[in-house]
Amino acid sequence: MTAKTIIRFENITKRFGKVIAVDDVSLSINEGEFFALLGPSGCGKTTLLRMLAGFETPTEGRILIDGQDISRIPPNKRPVNMVFQSYAVFPHMSVADNVGYGLLVDGVARPERDRRVEEALALVKLDGYGARKPDQLSGGQRQRVALARALVKRPRVLLLDEPLSALDAKLREAMRSELAQLQDKVGITFIIVTHDQDEALAMASRCAVMNRGLLQQVATPSDLYEFPNSRFVADFIGQVNMFEGRLAVDEPDRAVVQTTELPAPVYLDHGVSGARDATVWVALRPEKIELHKRGEGRAPPTMDDAPADHNVVPGMIKHLTYLGSESVYDVEIAGGRMVRALRTNLTRWDQEDFTWDEPVWLSWHACSPAVLLS
Image 1 (cartoon, rainbow, N blue to C red):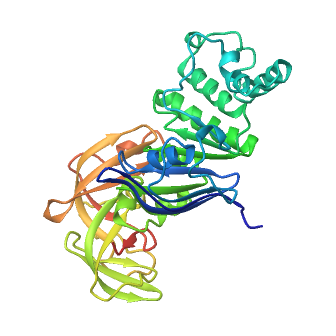
Image 2: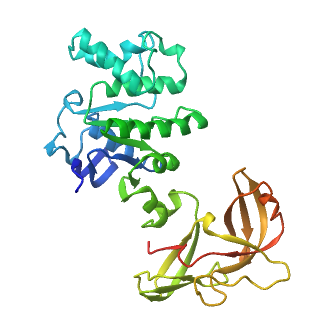
Image 3: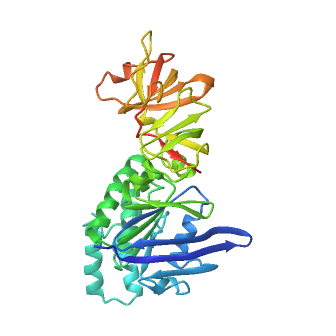
């Protein structure tokens, strides 16, 4: 069944004087999606969200909801509601009055208003908290009040502007799970703006990565991570080792990249579809690199039927970071280049397998690197 498009940005540009905040962005969002607008500070993601909410007007282009152009419709007439980074709850009102305020303004009768407030509080797991004041709540509870206040009006689309940034790390992680479960339960379209890649990958069904006002890539979290379409996306999403090189071989079932920084060629078990001898970049995630003892032994055998001496590089561990569930190794290879490898600690003694200033081999499977043309 084909997903129904609920929101369509058509060639949206927003200028503030001579500054182009959003540059000719076209984007479709499906009904019932949890969609993330992701990118560094100043990339245009919040401006795009504010235009959808009606707080900013596009300089060029149209925004459609259910096929209707809402670009010039006032915010209070749009079928959207917004949860702000600062929560924006009224400190002098009770939790119930905060949640029901929008219904009060809309003239909803008291019995109906009370019923919907009670339903909204139950949705965000705040049953029985209606009589409390915001200063009697934790940060996570105040965030839930803001969510309930937005949901009580039953919008078609819920907009979340960096909703978890004011929370501590542990609570932020818990709220990610709660938000994803809440979105699945209510079934409405959520659009979140965040600069936190982990937040977007953990919650969203699809993400749009932006940079300098431009849309870079729209994909599922796994595709963004495993199949980035540019150096910017590869570098922004997660950690990555990036090597510039030359596409020496490119055939339908294999490719070879010669780099100036790696002493061994990079072999891939698939084609790249680039021009022969073109400049490319090899993106290799730290967790896809395997560590082997070097000592006096020979290099480990290459994997995936790669030619000998491909995808295997000698180095020396120069820094080690133990993170409990995993350990991070910074390995110096020929020429002084540092390569980062990540290793899961499957047992309580795994962190003792390798140590500082130990000579090692680095290797990786032929399917692991991404080769980028730009």
